[in-house]
View 1 (spheres, rainbow, N blue to C red):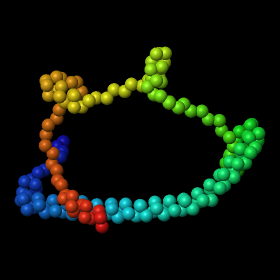
View 2 (view 1 turned 180 degrees about the vertical axis):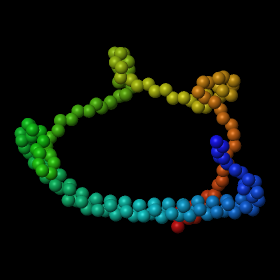
View 3 (view 1 turned 90 degrees about the vertical axis):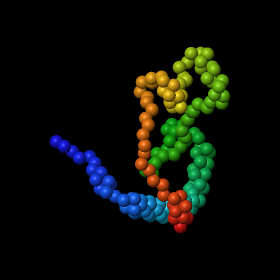
View 4 (view 1 turned 180 degrees about the horizontal axis):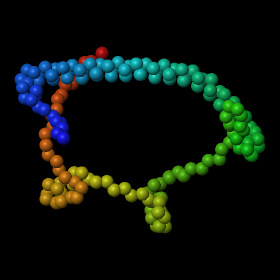
Length: 168
């Protein structure tokens, strides 16, 4: 079964002016898409600003309630020994024991861990692409790496046109 992947006959029949019109259409569409994205960004920013205002109004109510609850818990720690959390139909509140590790001197900690043979150091390997490229250019064979050379088809819509529509 033969499957045609590409047929360049239409492109071969195009003139430079035809290609200019295609590019103009492409550039105008990119600019229109930029306008649409900028408008959406403005709408998103307005919605986020409105949400922040609403959130701040709620926080004016929430903060004193949190302080009142915290004061109660701190005033009566004996009521939170067992169970540590008081459960209600709305959730729970109380005390929770927490522990975390804080590294105050990373270099000293690494030295101490190494000296004691504790397997607590993670070493990661990362390829240096520039060094591999130089090695291949110098004639070395690097399995799993190759330098590929070719051409790309590209276009650039003038930055001034894009910037103009972003500013509105």
